[in-house]
Length: 482
Image: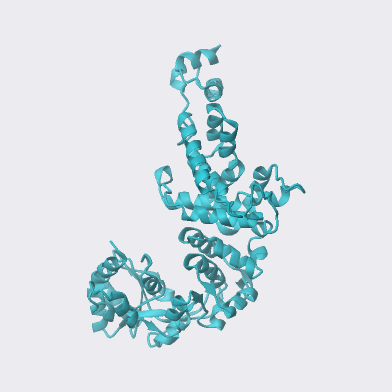
């Protein structure tokens, strides 16, 4: 279903609710990101409907006619109806700080309500009642839609000019999270902050100045995750941090890579930071992440992109005068742990990223050295579940691709090497995880009593299986019993 069909299908499901709000004297507006994404013709996910001229209890009474209503943010005037993927809110004013005092004001003007938005492209609105009158199949649908947008702060022009501006400077700096929202918007929408917004972001406090506490990391994690998963060029967000002089403050481990030179015959693209950003963009643009045992393709993508950010962090401490960086993979693991604490909070993923950092050189070095099946079996065993050789191979692929400079384009060659690595992993029967042990406890029943001795024999049998490629149960049994 295309964006237009989905949009009208969703609004059609809300039409009785909209009519009831209208009859009660309320005015429903689509606001925020959904309006922006309609203009940009991007995938629609979040629908925020702000209802004016009704008090909270009045809005709740109307919504309850259509299903069970949950107060997902009563303090902020936000309600949801079970079965409808939309947030229903009321116009409000927030005081400064991490725990703001919220004043809900149903009579607030739309201009004042939009004024509290961060960026002009997020400060547009659509009267839902007017949108429902649009002919869905009209050739000039987009033009008619744009004509209905209530744009009080110049968001449409800013989108056209690929420019980001703060709606209200004083309100912007009250919430330091907006700094990180700018960062991820730069990567997602490939827009540039204007000079005024850049200057604000150079100097604004990145902490709650009212309570004098650090910005909650949980809020920051989500902005980095959006940057990585929703951008074709997430590098733009990190490069912006560097350009305004705040990369060292936000991500000192990544900032340490700036200016660390590499051998030009291996890395014609430049220093390690440039290489990391190139590799990150290739990883973000890869189109065939898989679900499988991960359960979600986005989870595989997120893990691989985090590993790419971290894969060469060790070069900051291991690069020698001759520009070699022996041991940088292993040295990068503790550095990666520190960086990951700043941008992620999924401990399983963070642990797996460290494995990917430690072993990211192995896939293509195996190919160069003509490694045998035993090496592949050993490597698969080192990766903690649910990591597989595929994720490790992908990190090696993007690492190799991130070397574009002086007319050198390594993409085709790197893709071929990735495919060869996966073919060898398949031959070794470890492409999807380490080999399952051939000899099991039931095979030793009646021969060895259960307990530590049996466990030691099974461990020995598995070691023989990995090292020598023996899977015959009788042979393994004979070897360990001897």
